[in-house]
Length: 278
Length: 273
Image (cartoon, rainbow over all chains, first blue to last red; front, side, top):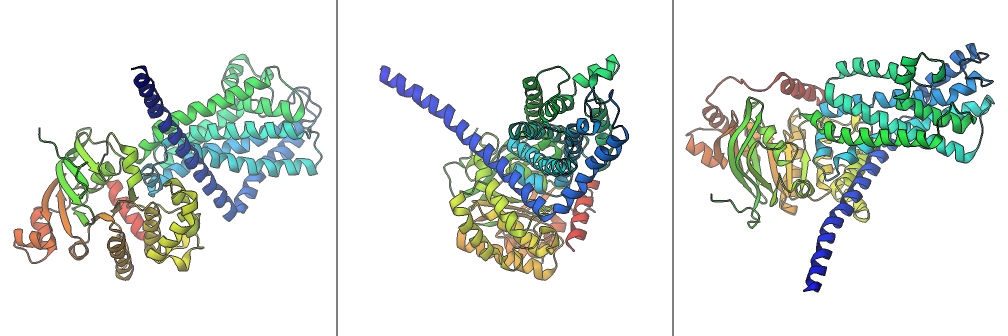
């Protein structure tokens, strides 16, 4: 009797665990496949990475140089350009990510999205794969930026572990913003409207964050907005790792907020994104 | 209620039972029933907006039916969506090749997302390259391929998983007669050698007449006629399938097809030209 109960339990466990394991496997395979495709695309078009890497350099060496000696904007740090490095790295990635939704609309207009939705990979896998794609572009841009920073001898800390941490934050944040972009894309559906919405979203995200200046110098209402902005946490963490300065707050909280942001936007995007095809 | 028993009957690759799809007030499919035998080429014809693409979307699990049932390869599209997606290949009307990847990379990509095991991928890709005659342009970027090459490549990517049922939505739209011929030759070979069931929608009457074992003509969300080309000609006392089509759809000027449908198909045609 008890043997039968045992085996029934085992069967139940089996039924619950195996699909989950298979599902996770398909999620991983799908994400890897989508990420792989993005890497291949980058290899066919490396010019894209370099042209996109110019914008953060302009911010760094024109905007940053103009305000080089300003101690208020750098929160007391001795070189505003170095202070800007994490900010412009995150900003360049944000711009890539937030317009990623355009690709989604394009793929709906052609047939790729329909194709993908009719394959066994889970919808979350499609979304995470796209997010990985955005993250890979951000990673490549970040590397270019770091090379330039090294050549121009800006005073950042060159600690391997810290730099790994910077890229982890960058990837999580970029993935999150890419998912946010996919959510917006599935709501607005046309390219023209999306361009408008993208601009509308990206500017407040950028300016109401700690990317260009410390949150502490903002008026209170804007501080509230900046504290609700995941980009602030992304930049805060990257700045602490790269420069060793903190505007208060904890590094683990930065990782937690940015990581949760990715999880939440990915789950929502996986729900809304397939509707884009209708 | 007498239930159709598709799960037991392996002869039927697709079973559609009183399928209804409504978008709000609009009824796109209004109670459609038909079955497709395993290994046959089944053509779904009809004017723009007749409900062909909607029907395909239900069968490929992209869309949930409002009422009724549908089974593909013995699996319920509603409750066993994953099993359905694992047994089908689908080539939508619009281009599903990534123009920024080469033909070979597209094959590799679709091999991965359709779950072809890693150790078999290379062999399957070789088979498909052979079957669809893709050898001459494997390393060209998707965006540089001609319409006929794109279609063969798309069908190739859908075959890697060796699907039981292959859904093709307007596979020869915008192709010139030579490219069309090549695509159909390859599909015929595939059916003969692998016994794949081919479910195709088309506007091309003479093409349907020549290629399909059986044809369903859809109009205003319903099946207006169903049978082999010969049966249909006999039933409507018509000389050609074109006349059957006109008789079955009442000879109205096309009323269906939204701006987006028309725009999409024209865009596609011009891009492939």
